[in-house]
Image (cartoon, rainbow, N blue to C red; front, side, top):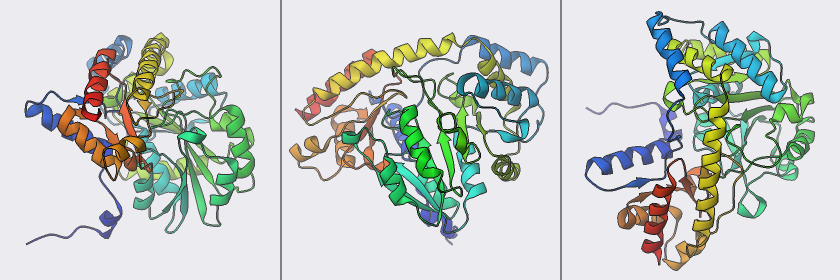
Amino acid sequence: MSLSVSERMDRVMPSATSAVLGLAAELREAGRDVISLGAGEPDFDTPEHIRQAAIEAIREGQTRYTAIDGTSQLKAAIQRKFERDNGLKFAPDQILVSCGAKHTLFNACMGILSRGDEAIIPAPYWVSYPDMVRVAEGVPVIIETGIDNDFKVTPEQLDDAISGKTRVLFLNSPSNPSGSCYSREELAALGEVLTKHPQIVVLADDIYEHIHWAEAPFCSMATACPELIDQVVTINGVSKCYAMTGWRIGYAGGPGEVIKAMKTMQSQITSNPCSISQVAATAALDGDQSCIREMVAAYEARSDYLVKALNEIPGFECRAGQGAFYAFPRVTSALKAKGMTGDADLVQLLLNEADVVLVPGTAFGAPGYVRLSFACSIGKLEKAVARITAALV
C-alpha cells in the first residue's frame, strides 16, 4: 500500500544545494576524488573563544529549555550588535532568535503571508526563497537580473513588480549566489518605491554582512532607509561570518507585530534554539571580532584568484563580487560550444569527466549560469579550475 502525502509537497522542491552536498559525499564514499565547490560553508574552524564558551556552558549545566525567542543574554548581545554595526535600536520584544537564519526566514514567511499573497524575489536568489513562499501558500514573483546589470534589481523593476497583493520583498546583500552588494544609495532608491507601499515587509537577509570587501562600508536596508523601520525585518546569524554553520543560530530584528507572529510560529515548530549554541553565539557577537577579518582576507584573495581564472576558461564570463564566498559565471557560450541545452548539462559533464561538483544556475532562478563556492583552499580551487578547463577544451 502506498501512502499519500500532502498537496503542499507538489509545490516544494528539495534544496538544490543540499542535494549537491549529499551527492558529493556519496561519490567520495564510493572512492572518487571529488572536489565539491557546491557548499556554502566556511572551511575555517569555529574560533576558539566561541568553542570554549560552549564547553563552559555544558559544564555549568546550561542544557535546559530557554525562552522560545532566545535567552536574555543573547538577545542583549544582538541588540548591541545591531546598534554597533547597523545603527539600529530594537527592544527585546522586537528580536527573535531561531535555529539558523533559514528558520528565521521561514518563520517570517509563515507569519506574514496569507494564501495568494505575493512575494517579490530578485533572481538570482538563494534557492530556498521561492519554496518558503509556496509552503506559506504565497506566490513568488520573480524579478530577473543578470551579469550585465551587476545582478541588482532597479527601482523601476521593483515598481513594476508590485501589485495590490504584494506583501513581501526579499533582499539579500551580499548576495548568494552572485556576491553582489547593494550600496547605501541603491537601497535608498529602492526605499523611495517602498514608501508608497506600507503593506510590504522587506525581508533583509544580511547573513553575509561581514563577508564583504567593497570600498564602501556594508549598509543594511533599515540603515539606509530609516523611514522604513516599521517595514523591514533585518535577518542575520552566526553561521557564515563566525564559521558556525552547525551551531544553527539565526536572528531577526523588526516590527513588534511581525516578530510576535514569527515567535508564535516558532513556538509550534521548534520551541527554543539550542541552549549551548545560544551561549556560543553570545560569545561570538560580544567577543573579539578579529577572527572575521582574517577569514574575509582569505575569501577576498580566493575571489580574486577564482574570478580571473574562470574568465580564462573558454565560454565562461565572470564578474567580481563584493562579498559572500561564491563566483557566479555566465556559461552560455560554453553550453553552445558543447552543444548543451542547459546549465544542468554542464554541471553533469563536469561531475562525470572532471570530478568537480558545482550547482546549476537554474536552481537560483538564473539559467545559463553556475555557482562555485570558494569556501575552500586556493590549492583546491586551482585543482578544480585545471580539471574544468581540461574537460571543456
